[in-house]
Length: 396
Length: 212
Image (cartoon, rainbow over all chains, first blue to last red; front, side, top):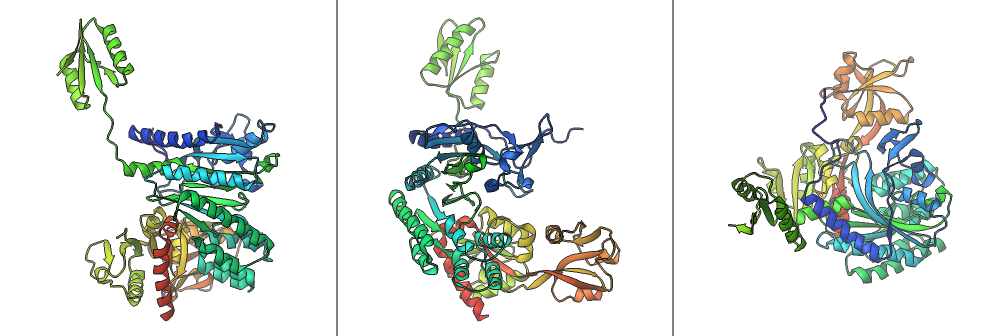
């Protein structure tokens, strides 16, 4: 007995008409930005070997992966991420390519959505990867591209946040605690969970590093953050990280304008993946980040080719939901319908093609009578009805 | 004036304590006290409004960003988990998660897989996973204390406040799992886009908490 034949799996949805147009428009405008910056498109398969996603710096938890088997019993997954497959290509087919490489993609990622939370299991992402340069200029290029993307989405009411994962890594490295404990600290900072973080750190001891870590979740906001951070802890490495980040902040603030750029040193997601500057973009009207990325210098080395890289991904579905709220487009109607009298079908095709070449949209009437055609045109809101026999006439 | 900050408030005991705290902080909460059947209520003196919801829904609303701030018990946070900032321990609504069994029985005796009855299956699973122990979990909606008495389960994992209900039914706590109290949570994007307003509000609340 079939019970699931009328619905789509949880976390997926069908897109109809305007939704398709809105998504395509978003993709087109973002891709225009990417292409004009010299980025070339890659398409990778939806299905990959499970092994691709189990490396040290990009471990994806089993629970979230959609899994299949191939004909030899090997485990396959629906790709949960776009950057990792691109790292695979770079380390194999593009190993001899000239560096730096500028790549972009536009494809779905799949992650099991928690049940009944209104989250998607299948999300379209588009993004860039700038591979083979560890320069500050590369970071700046990627971030300014992110700014161009964000300012073209929604109504331009965006906010871009920068941080540097090394600030946290350097601090926590100075603590004599196990990796599990470091992970606990990271999770509390990530959730800005002050009560739990304070309790946990109090049990470890009390020194300048611990005091600094306690303040880390609150180190976000505007330029004043750099002042606060430098008072918390100072050594050569940390000072360099902060001054580099401040320099970057000042530069991109010039591009983006006041108030659009913020700093968050407590942004500590995916520490084993990112290795430097990280970014996040938000749009007014969406409850999560719509853009995220950063520098990942160790990821491609997992595939045997040790080169630095940076990039970001945009959640196209999120941008779409913001834009659908903004402009509730009505379905666009067809300009004209062509009705052919018996024996004048070819002439009708010619008339339709002529209209289409002039830039209008034209449908052929599939009805037997003109009356039925008129009723259909009325229902579909088609303005022009054209009758074709010996001559072509417009029906009122 | 910009959009009001929307605060999702867990109905019931936490609601009363939170309103008390807000009033002590100098905000006029008359509308919330005399709410009738309304579900979205303005707070005077500050650009904010309160949404009354069930505990699980508070987390859902904050996670999706339709509410900026939520007041909810740590028990619900532990059971639901999710992506938000957990900023302040409000200190009220204090109790604990505990493992309780029939008085005088040895929960760990024997080789058999134990059965646990609970309203909180995720917390129970995480707790026993962290001990490396397999257990069968039975979800109960009403009085969990019944399950060991009816011999459906070897023990229960539940919220314990004073322990009176347990005692009256011949049960006793054998292990504390985690302390619980009310928390103030914030949507991750609201925190960034409305940093000043939210930080101000939290600062006022924290100052008045210390006075409590």
